[in-house]
Image 1: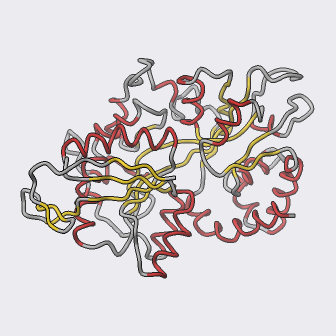
Image 2 (image 1 turned 180 degrees about the vertical axis):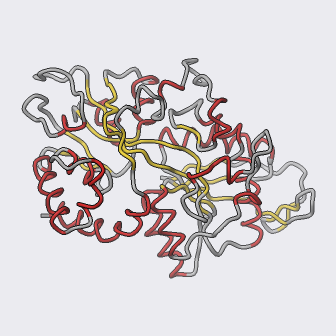
Image 3 (image 1 turned 30 degrees about the vertical axis):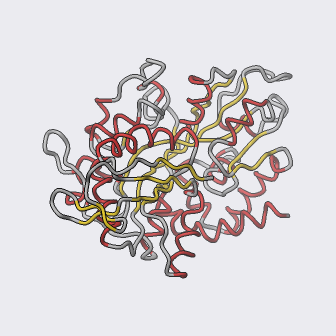
Length: 371
């Protein structure tokens, strides 16, 4: 599904799809931005894209909701010699893969991105969240679990991630993401493997078999989702009683839609999301993308995104600016995955490990699903 926001040119000289900016730099007047759809994409549209096109009314932005397939599609575009995307939102491990394969452009973060208001260079403001020379961080989010508070036949309330496997006390259909990331870690955790040993165990054939065997217990009672909006819809419709998704999607379901759902923060899997620039863009397209990124990743813009969704901004200087929800007026800080009350037992996702093992485990996971 694609949605489009188009504004007409108003007096700025254009020629053959190119805008001549005040400094006479040629910039394309169209941009295709790839993201994840749903509440997250809406937060980007409100915080970044709409203000940008208000400042640049000659520019049209087209959204493409294909981030879940970004690696495969960029590989195919590269092979065909036809890059049709200008800017792509990806998780950190995919950014590392795309960078390693030469499909994403390396950037100088301090040259491209605005400094913090106090002059701190962007590279210091983002700090350790710059996990790749090609990656421009936006948000810290988590994959966690939501559950219906009105589920029938339950004995108590879920308190740990392992409630997913406790089908005796918490009967009903589950939903889990249709990929190995997160699922394999939770499976081993709930099979008795210590958190600090998870990736060492997963590196072995025996460890992978152990994780899949634990997932076998849920396989026939699970809806496997591919879009972040799936589990919130399944929960709202009562088709599942418990399921994983991104914490911001659950915030939208609970706070904005007032559904009888609660969030289980235990063992939430911390992750990063941000931008990559596809390699091989024309000079005009690259100039437009760089101009947009400088605007969209400054301190205020990243803080502004938190007005629409409960993801923590990736800049240190943005955190103190996190305020209230743009429409509900509620304080957003307690709804962030990084809030101390929510982060008592987190699982730190290993980006580099998954960049190395993702292709092999993706294939193994899909084969397991088909059995």
